[in-house]
Image 1 (cartoon, helix red, strand yellow):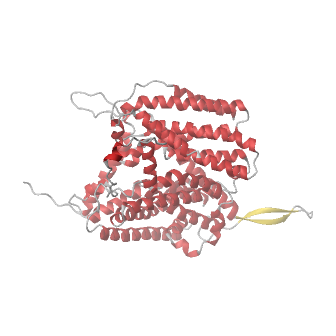
Image 2 (tube, rainbow, N blue to C red; image 1 turned 90 degrees about the vertical axis):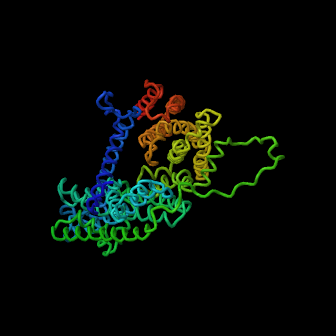
Image 3 (cartoon, rainbow, N blue to C red; image 1 turned 45 degrees about the horizontal axis):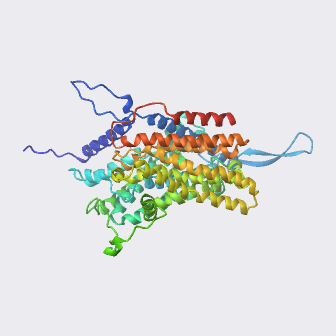
Amino acid sequence: MSDSIAIGADTAARLLVRLRLRRTLNQALGSWQILRRKPVSGEKRAATAGKAKLGWLLAGLVGLSMIFGAFNLSVQALTNMQRTLGTAEVTASVGKSTLRTKLRRALPNAPGSGLPAGVLQAVALTALILLIAVTCFALGAGDLARPDWDLEWLATLPVSLSTLLAVRLIERTFLGGGLAVLWPFLAVAAWYAGHDIAASAGLGLLAAFPLLAIVATARTLIDTGLRLSVGPGRLRNLQSIVGLAAALLLYLALSVGISPSSYILDWAPALPGWAFWLPPGLASRVVAGTEAASTGVAAVLLVMQSAAIAAVGLALLMRQLKNGVVSTGARESGRRPARARTAAEGAAAPERRLLSPIQARELTLLARDRNFLVQTLVLPVIVIGAQLWFNAGSEILSSGWTSASGLAAVAFFISAYALMFSALQTLNNEGNALWILYSVPQPLDTSLWQKALLWGTVCLVYPLAVFAIALSLGRPPLQVLGHAVVVLAGVPIFAVIATALGVFASDPLQQQVQRRLRPSYMYLYMLLAGLYAYTIIASTVWQVVGLMVLTALLGLALWQKARDHLPYLLDPSASPPARVSLSDGLVAAMMFFVVQGL
């Protein structure tokens, strides 16, 4: 037996970082499998090619649109900050006459900064809100109750635990995903402070990465260390609360880029001076600084604070994980077994139930999993309500409370959002037990149809409640009834569409739970929901009827296509024969119909 060679912490860290980067690269290239197919030769055998899908194209377009949207919202946010907090209203005389008019004059910049003091305060407050929102989203994206398999595997390597945790913090800092939120805002703030494009991008990165290190530390402390001392049930409850907080904070931060009457613009002048010595305040000083000395001091202090927080977090993690990285097995403890049935009870005739066993199981899952309950029934109301509340000054959003069509649009989008987290994820919620649905004595499409019927019925509660509120506000009953027909007919149709798209979006063979649902189909679903929302504001009855009929036909076509796809779902390489289906033409017809109407 040959002797093993000991390696140092720096070499181990370098190898682990390379392993993480290689894993990320392989996951990225997996989306381009269709473009990397090569014929199998005798010299070198190629891996089995994945299923041919165009999800990578839609995902790429969506990614580019999200980045463009982030920069556009950041530009609008800084514009609103400059207009509200960077200028003051003055009264000036016009010529030699006594006519006086009110003008807005730009305020002087803060010392050592390219932004006025009020704008700098708003930038620091927004950076603080974005920092907390990114942390909450990082915690809510995964499953806090499920241990990370890679940490368990890496803990068996002959590497110290401190090295493993340090590499984990580095990985989550650079690959955590929060850069797409913080960097655009900080870069645009630097550009408004007078820097050129290259300097703005560099200063934005310099200020964003220390903040992302703080996010990575907080995330690792909670999802790795807290899992050892808190039970899975409480962790799921915590995750549901964190998810709600993330949505509220994100819409609060976005409101400054949508409405000039955002709460951030009202709260920013009251930001105390000591807040600029915190990491978000230091980041705002870095991107807005115009003097090399003061900017350099702020950058050094920002890096030192983030490093100190990471060091303290690493020490706490070492203390939490001193007895191991897991505390429970793969299975949780079950409930108390039910009372055994007697022979007389077993021989009794089965009772007819209102719900099928599949539907009863869905409701049981909804009652037991509070995180699923909050995401499905509470989060849609929070998301739509937050947009209306935080953007109360926006004419488009505030009109929802002054017109029947606006209330109808709110009712439909709440139901559509709820269906995205329920009907669209019917297969994804099965997890590793999806194969059981293939073995029950009924076709899989029948089980999915029952789920679609259940969620379509449950999500009708939202429009019924909104229309009841509309009638109580004194809206004309006939006008409310017309919009109610459109919305109440659209909810069950989109329950079918969401369930069908969930079949195409599901990847049950994916090892990572977060990647089992392709996000491109979620954006496609929301695009279709937006197209259907045009029926609420359509000017003629024929446009309304035409779009409703096209949407119903689209739901039937997608359902037929999903039925053809189900037998191949658990096969890693086989797919139904590729052909142009009726659903493709109906989507194009809907888009043409809406564009023509607009």
